[in-house]
Length: 207
Image 1 (cartoon, rainbow, N blue to C red):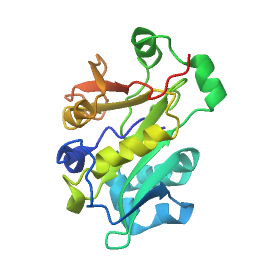
Image 2 (image 1 turned 90 degrees about the vertical axis):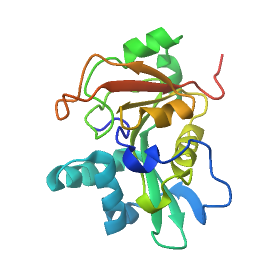
Image 3 (image 1 turned 60 degrees about the horizontal axis):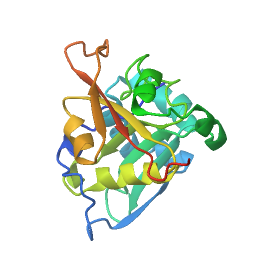
Image 4 (image 1 turned 45 degrees about the vertical axis):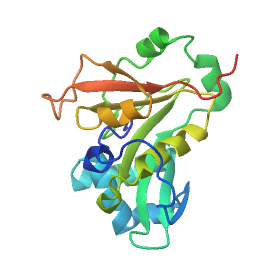
């Protein structure tokens, strides 16, 4: 399964992290299953996942139904200007498994395949895991990436938010306040890319 959007890529690299005001002409809401099969959404998913057609269909048909998929839905083209897909654990189970500190959290998330692109299912006990995120190139620098991250965080504000990425997008997460830790492992598809785990503390942690 996927784990985080690792590829916020050029669209999110253009964002300065601060939410844009007055530039979004729509709403962020959960996408319907039929909306995730449109050509526009498929293009965004391809940008987020960076995989071939067969694997992309597998992500769409088998993985996305297990995730919470939020989209920026606008009244003007593109109808879906961006999306984020996250694994949100059952709240009671998550609080039982939540790490007591950042060291324990790093141990919990320190194994398995990288987030971004997919293939890291199993991470995330006690945390929201951002699996995929992408913003349409025409919205680069508009702050939609930051708004999507905020919307994902709001799904379970008492849990930390975890993502993995590489050099292309790590600056985006740093600007949003994520703690960044370099990983020893690499994604086998891109062995020359340095990987990072990014963690945003819970907004309203419970005692």
